[in-house]
Length: 301
Ligand SMILES: Nc1ncnc2c1ncn2[C@@H]1O[C@H](COP(=O)(O)OP(=O)(O)O)[C@@H](O)[C@H]1O
Ligand SMILES: N[C@@H](CCOP(=O)(O)O)C(=O)O
Figure 1 (cartoon, rainbow, N blue to C red):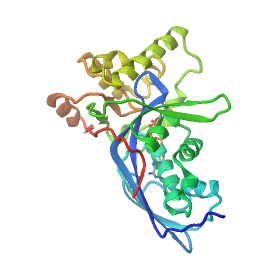
Figure 2 (figure 1 turned 180 degrees about the horizontal axis):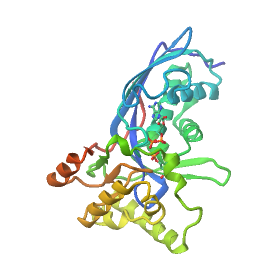
Figure 3 (figure 1 turned 180 degrees about the vertical axis):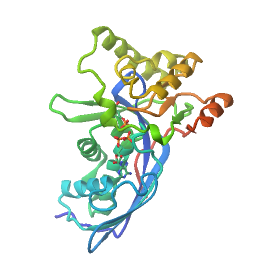
């Protein structure tokens, strides 16, 4: 039986995510209760996207919009027919901020495809994870956006992405320090500064630290400082993230487990900041978010 567009409307909320978390470069990720929300209706005629919040007046409002492209890819993947779409996006996740906006946008589109079709089980979480990764390229952000919680993602030699949940103490306090908009940096730019090979000692350093972070997240907060040390990406990114690296260094000197979130420039701290520290950042134009950890992942309502 062929898959039809059977619903008049679908609505999804997709969490912001962090990736890397220090030593888990391109593999560790975590989702936050801080969401983009999108609704869609199939229509006769051309596509129109209304964007409110982040990206308003900036991202495309036609078929070239990332969420619409992902929605169409989802429909194609299950052999469902295409249509025009009236889409409404309420966006909170900063673009180019290191909080996985593009992964969340791809996941939103694919989940909306699931929400519109007659056989939603044809577009299960595993397929959404794989298609969104093909679309966006970063399974470390896509995995927590789809599954929620903390995740580890990896890729087979043939390119097939996989993900599994990591145990996480959901009461772990989180602060996301988002610098002023002028410092936003695309992930593409932040990857250009990475070397193609690293010293063996640094690879060993990160292997142990990533394992330590896994223990820390599962309920050993005493291991968070050691578990958030990294030698594979953050130092190389210093020249494109000077302000974020300075904030990260200063916080680590004060005993906070601070890392660059994703490819930056947002700084992730696995703790709450003291008020004076927080106010000093806000005076310099930074926003401090304190979201809880999301355990559900993308959610169709
Ligand atoms: N909700 C969205 N709707 C449309 N496009 C989006 C959305 N979120 C992200 N994008 C696109 O992805 C780009 C940011 O992706 P990227 O450089 O990977 O940064 P991030 O760290 O935020 O994922 C934006 O400039 C925009 O083109
Ligand atoms: N592992 C990637 C993560 C990119 O995350 P984003 O939120 O900045 O898109 C990297 O470090 O490049």
